[in-house]
Image (cartoon, rainbow, N blue to C red; front, top):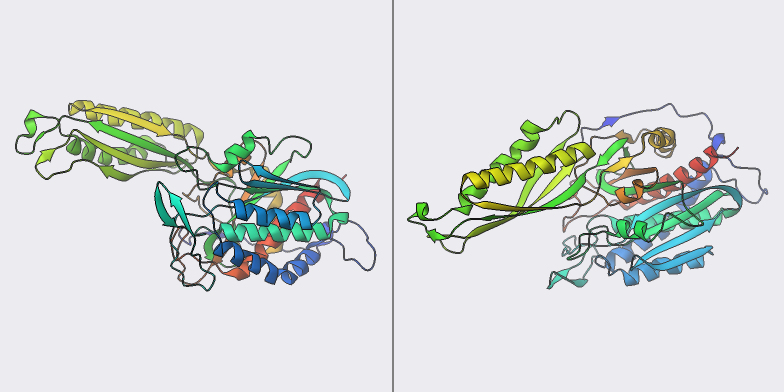
Length: 437
């Protein structure tokens, strides 16, 4: 992500009295932004300790058993009204009912780590091992999920402390398998939705979430509508006819056909889609064919990714991809078998909710709120947003020269964690206050 993001500065109100809920006993501070700020700062050492523990003990997707137990124990100790375990296999859902009537707000954190061997040299670096695709691999929180969990644990403790003054109910969703499940084309958020996490007695009206990125520490990034891309995976087999490399005319060469296909599919976004309306990307990430220098093989197998921000454009790109690979293969005498595996939808920030909550972000991190260009990475938070209005933001936690997410050298600036606690707490409180009559 380039730093070419546009800063938007809003005038800060002279007072934050709009956040105050009610007069309380003199011995207890009212739940307002000042209280949130003070509590976030006071609990910062705890949040960092939680993050380091989780970082040192990562678990792969749908294997987050110890992680889930650690979180559930925390929520139970806070006196949550409900703590459900084993949701979507390893997920945890906690319900905190406030002392005053109001809406239900959902907050979400992902939990899983990646099959990456850590190279940060941190004293709490992961030495964990796991199994991925039948091989032993290192396991690492290389995408900030350890930070997301510790932030949401902090929000849980902060709001539980002031639950008597909380005008509504908060549903805390600790979600497994955001990175996807081995051998299965589904994800933790999709499974949680299918199991009814957004329905029932405590059905939320809105959902908030965040993701750590290597933006300047303490900054908050937002974008209305398409924030992160829809992602689809495609598998393509080009079937030719094996022959000797010295006599290519006696067979059908799937390698030269594959070369033409790789070039041609790049022209789909460039020449066949109105990319001024929304970006689109098609990339081939894997290509295999042949075993010897002088044998033209029977087939070539390819895999790639598709990234889009518009539902109609996504459908059009799929259609054009089929047409391109099939017609080029036919023209070469080969056949094409294309399978597009649907992935995450667009991470779509509800425009009205984004506009409503922007002043909250500005108060939480004055002068450090960025309206950014679309991010071509994808997030399964989008499954929640398909059901209810949602706002997903970026939390800057970058160190100078820091590696990007998914790198074995990925690390985060822990000073940003308290900003995350403040942001999710304040978004929850401000939304609840906006619904008070």
